[in-house]
Figure 1 (cartoon, helix red, strand yellow):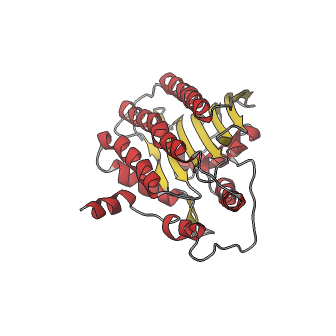
Figure 2: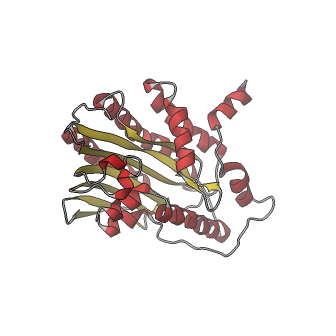
Figure 3: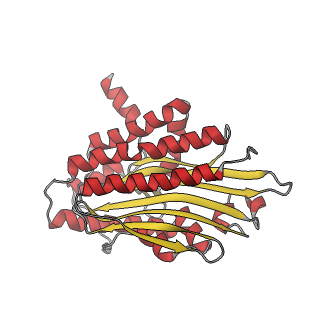
Length: 312
């Protein structure tokens, strides 16, 4: 672990500003919806603010939460890969969002940017960043997927040629439903345990990715939000939302950390969609757009490399 002392106040200021700027932009995009602000305190130390928009013109539910919690013992989900830190006092802060549009042609999306710090036996600070963003379409458009990944790649590029492929691969592997043998969506970026080459550069990377989220997502919303849809598309969207629930409750580290650390349950579970359905042993019709999601999109693909080969 890098031992450079982190500037926790700067991280907190940035994350709170990120929550504010994303919520402001989403209200403009939605048109009618406004975020309800809900501050909360955690028994044991810290708290946060949940902001939720419901029944807007674009977003059926949008949740953007900030939390800053601390305690005497690291939760198990935070020490799985670093057991030597079990039992340590900790501080954790982050912004997490999940946006569930009403129109099935607009993808659901998730983003998270977080910071942890604790101390080792000899006293130096132990800290790391994590986060990223990913896209979950129901009726995917290839140009939207390419835009999403190009934005992610361009954001990573100033930090090194290996950043995008490494964190794109990590995203594909992390947002994978093993019990379904499918990805949750078309991926994006995911990183954790980030503390090299030092605090300033790591924090700069997190700010860069956080500041590019809206540029990745809002053009897709603008292109698809007015598309006409019917009951078939809506029912398929609700069915596929079930996969989102399954992932968040079975695998998601943020959900596990929040529950294990005694966070506010309503704020932790605001990522879940407001309406969802399951259907026993369902499969899409052969040759349908729904089948195309399964065959062409719910698997890891090197989207940009494939496009580059086509252009050559």
